[in-house]
Image (tube, rainbow, N blue to C red):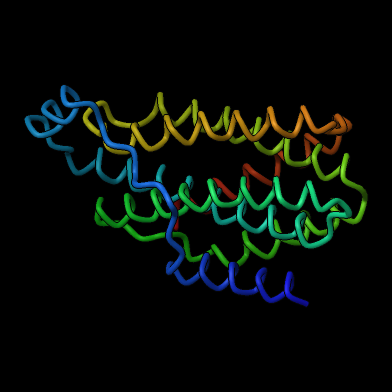
Length: 211
């Protein structure tokens, strides 16, 4: 019951925007900050950054839900502790991306509750299927997110060093989460399941980019 109450509390914090991370948002280097001050974003660039960072925020909403669903149904206390620690890092990402979207004059996705519900359901089912399956979903998800963030680094406007600093740190953290899952014995998911995950992620990113 305590775990369920904590999961509900985390869901409310995630969706209401009241959740805060433990680490401050990464900042650009001094050289990058100086360049950004002298080269402000144009309106098309600002809109592109808003779209990309909104997608990243939606991904972090889903990540919170996935971890909470997995932790709630995991059979291993050790794995629940690992998932909770990773969720805390993802909470940093959630706060960073939300703050950056707002700083750019944008808003987060209206579909966030849908992303949360879908990811929580997947996480809970994966947890019931067994810890190795749950870790397999975690590893596959984080690897896809890492590739997704790498593509965003290429697409972000050159002058948006603030967003780039956030995405770069997120990419590092996601890679570490995937490595953790691998070390703990993640099961390699069948290709059809990974293809379904990529298709679902494509739907989410497309809708989140638009609103």
